[in-house]
Each structure stands twice: as structure tokens, then as C-alpha cells.
Length: 396
Image (cartoon, rainbow, N blue to C red; front, top):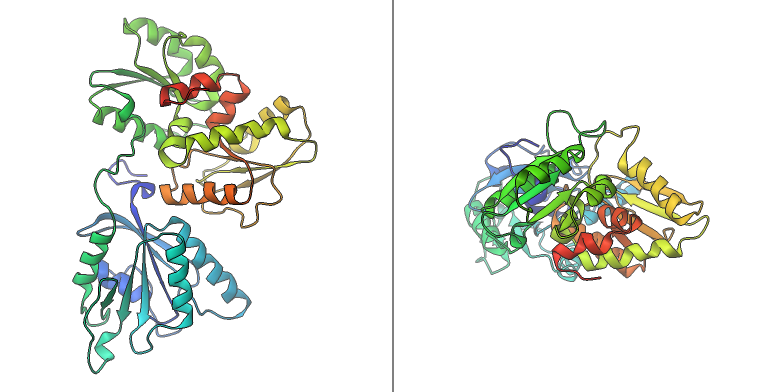
């Protein structure tokens, strides 16, 4: 991620849905004034969801997601339609593109019902209105546009901007826990798994949120924490650590200094902290042969001591003293069938937007599968979960 661009997970996600050849890709190009999406007269040119990060005025930084046609056919077509439907889980808003000369069909009606069920704000863009003999008047949720002629594009963008809430929605990573002039010590181990020459996204975002609160961020490695606390001359408002260093950092942090982790902060910021805390207790019920899903929202290069695929499985088996089976997903992949799993352990979700993270949590709850978070699980295993969640207002 560039230090000068908004993270994709913090951008408004706009899904563009419709049948083949309705002009979805052309509409994206018309809205952005750029040739971002490939267009063709051949039906089914877009075969997979394609995400494009951009600035869309007057809304600001967004991610536009071009999807395959809802009426795609054949075995591959069925898979493409399923992929298109999965995009809904991350959409803050949907634009349903309809060929105005064809009108709404059963496929559109089914899509609109799905959007309503997921409580996703949406607009209908009646494209190719330049081919109509007479263009009907726009309605609250329907705009007549022509991607080819540029008709109605400005009005569509204005409607999108009014449909998506903008500005401060009240969600903060850490700022709401701080007062101006507070000191916060951030513990960032530099080991073989740390990226070269940069901090990872949750660390960057936490520093920014601390600064916006008028507080001061002090960053050190776990090996320097004791010396850092001593040199401060006063207790910090809080210590926030990489979850992997919880054991050492907890021992080196005085009991009267609040302690939590980046992952736990993001469990609150992106998901539901109370749900993740409840989910971790499923560790006690695991039996030999049970399957645990470990899911990460990013697709980083795996290291020999990778947290998700190496360390967590070992720590879980050491704690439970059970022989378990582990499966792994990363990026946008998340199983449609959760029945094989007795526990899901998810990362903090810094690369996922809030809607997608909460969609995964809700799906796990609907399927009756406990789901927890990396940091919550690690603190639980080390016997410090009550301490780790107390700074966030959760008493255990």
C-alpha cells in the first residue's frame, strides 16, 4: 500500500451488477472518465469480478467492482454468477445495470431481492437510454443513463454520493480510548516475518489514529519495551503489541498499564469484539480429529514461521493437547460451506472492509460455527485475555 493512498479496506466499495452486455464495464468507464474496464460487444467479456481503486467525485476514494453477467451460462457461467453474488458481501452500495431497451427481468428481480435482504443500498441504472424513443423520468432508485453518449452520468454519480454515508461514522481504531497528550507505546517486533522496510497496515493505521486523537505514539520492539517504559518517566495510557509477542510484552508491562494488541483493536474496529471473545472458548471443546479453519484477509508471502499456517496451529494443538486438522484460506476466499469446521480463527481483517468482515462473522453465527480472532486466541492461550480486552471496555 502506498503511504499516500487510502487503503482499499477503508474505501467505499461499489458493486456493478447486471446481465451480460448491459454495459456494466462501459458504465464504469463513463463514470470515471477513464478506460479502466475492458469493453466489447461480445457477451461475457468480464469473466471474473475485477476491482479498481479510484477517486469518484463527489464521493472520494472508492473501489469499483465489475462483475460477470447474471445470465452467464454453462458450467463456467454458473461459477461466474456465484462469484458475482459473493461480491455482495463486501459491497457498501450496488448499481444494477439494466439494458433499458430490455427492461427489468426475473434475473434483476432476484438480484434486487438479494440486495434488500442484505440491506445493501442500491440504484438501478437503465443504460442505453439513447436507444429509446422516449426516456422516462428518473425515480428515487432508478436513473436513465447512456454510457455511450454520456447521458445522465453526472446525475448517477450524485445519486450514488447521496446514497452512501460519508464522513466520520464514529468507528475508531484507538482514538476514542485516548485523551489529548496521552502516550501510547506500540510494540512492533522485527523478525523474519516482518516486511522489509515498512510497517504493516494495522500499525500504520493505529499510529495515524493516535495522532488524530492528539496523542503521541512511541514505537519500539518487544526487546526494548522495558527500557522504553523506564525512560518515559510516566506510565503510558496504553501499550499495544503485536499479538505474537503477548507473553513477553505482558510480563514486561506493569499491571497498572492497560495492554491490548493490534489484532484485538481491529476485532472491535472491523468486526464484533464480544462475538470473537465468546468464540474463543470453543478451544476447550475441540476433540481429536476436529477441523479448525484459519482465515486471513490478505495474501502475503508465507514465511517459514508464518503466524497463520505455522505458529497458530502449533499453539492451538499445544494448548488443547489434541490432534487437529487445519485448513487455510486467504484474501477474498472464504468457504461457502462451514459445516466441516468446529472453530474459525480469523485475522484482524485489515485488508477487508467492515461489511465483508461482518458478513463473515454473521455467516459463521448463522451456521453455528464459533469464530474468534488471532489476538484474542493468543491472549486466551497465554491466560491474559481479561487484561487484553479490558482497555476496550470489556470486563471478563
